[in-house]
Length: 261
Ligand SMILES: Nc1ncnc2c1ncn2[C@@H]1O[C@H](COP(=O)(O)OP(=O)(O)OP(=O)(O)O)[C@@H](O)[C@H]1O
Image 1 (cartoon, protein in one colour):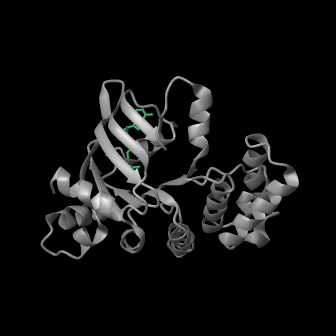
Image 2 (cartoon, helix red, strand yellow):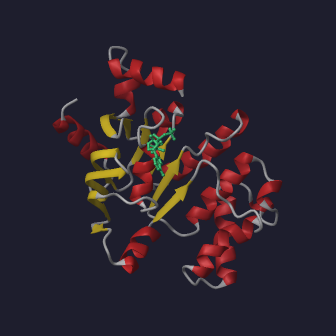
């Protein structure tokens, strides 16, 4: 697929035409190993991007560079028109717009569900406790587990913990949500409840980048599917271009990746 077609695809799928994430010539090395190679990617407001590719292709590293959990060494990461730079205060402000959900939930085990959802609001945004709790309950209701608010993470199922992690991220009122294999650690019967929460979020207009191999989710929700391989974006297209076109050779590549995952 030509760069021109990719650009048109991206523009067509944009909800408002405003770029919210721009990766420009982004490269990163771990020692001598180049994990990301000259990545160019523009994500528009309200777009839902699914990222897939073989293990080790750099998917996690790319999305972790978007909120600077990892640091790129060349190129630019621009969020809402502002590039991460040397000014840590500005970097913190940029990061506040971005919520992240990890494969391993990353909840604090010694805090209740409610406290997990209020801690950053209280300490980072200085929201009064009662208000933070009301916000937390709102989002716990949205992911359908308000009744678990006073339990501790280890008293919940994996699917419930992941929904808490989604609620916790939403409590910070992010403009962008990043998901790094959010269902990979879950038992099969719990995957759907998490995907449903993500689908509802997508339908609310949230800009999302989701690293996942859940292709039903990609089909239902994604505006664009991006394939990475060896640190590069090797292909991107709307999901139907891959899945509804039996002639499309990337479908074969994709299936082989899934089978080996
Ligand atoms: N902290 C690190 N130090 C050195 N190498 C790393 C580090 N983190 C990741 N890597 C390497 O970078 C490459 C890309 O890793 P990354 O986790 O981004 O891939 P991925 O596509 O998300 O893989 P997976 O699907 O298995 O999660 C891999 O070869 C990995 O071993």
